[in-house]
Image (cartoon, rainbow over the protein chains, first blue to last red):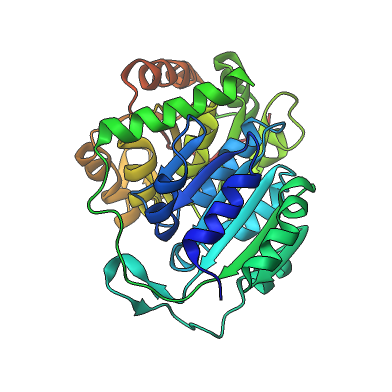
Length: 190
Length: 165
């Protein structure tokens, strides 16, 4: 398994000018790594970050859109895999942090923890490329291909369960609104 | 004889508004809408598996400068609740919701899907307008203008089955 923070650092180093949306557990680490006009830490409607990412990807097909999702979040919007595969945005890269637990609520196991294959689900849904990685070195070796090739691509990153919370509470409505509009403006400029 | 509600006239009105994307999940009355929409130049159809995806997709499109609407049934609107709250209401984004009014027939409500719709829209502060015939078509543009001016969702309730153009 790989450390979640280190995995996100790898993605950050290789993202280029991609928009990055982080969902739930990934949102704990990402603000420590990056805080630019192209970052959209996602809070609020759980599981919906992948659908917001699809909207951005359809609106800006020349811009890479990276979603760093989490296993519990994706389970809450699992049908989005099929919707994304149906629209087939070539610019969408879907990472999933798989830690097997609901981190923010104290570490309860997700349904079918250790049994469900998110890469398998994405492949069956119709994603163009799927990966399941549990070593940081493998992510380092493949990340340019994962981000660079035409998608949609899903890459599942196996991480150990942790209940450590590095964020507490939610951003204010004004902060969320500002983040949305910063990303929108940055995309519009491209 | 009651006046028709024509799918093509609805789409013409949406084109006048500059709509770029229709995010939708078909309901039992929408067959003629699909026939009219599927090859429509200038508007991209985004079919979803579940209605809760629709507001979130619309949010992504809207912040990036596109003009989506959501076309679903009232039952699907009930499924949208937290997604609509978290991705549209909290972010203060405009969104035109076109909702099939299952259970509505000429002013009479039958079944909970119809009975609960308007009270729930009212509870969320979502203004709504009824569309029953082609005479009501301009309500679409008015609702679209209102959602953009208020940065809050506005709903058009489709109170009758669409007919073929």
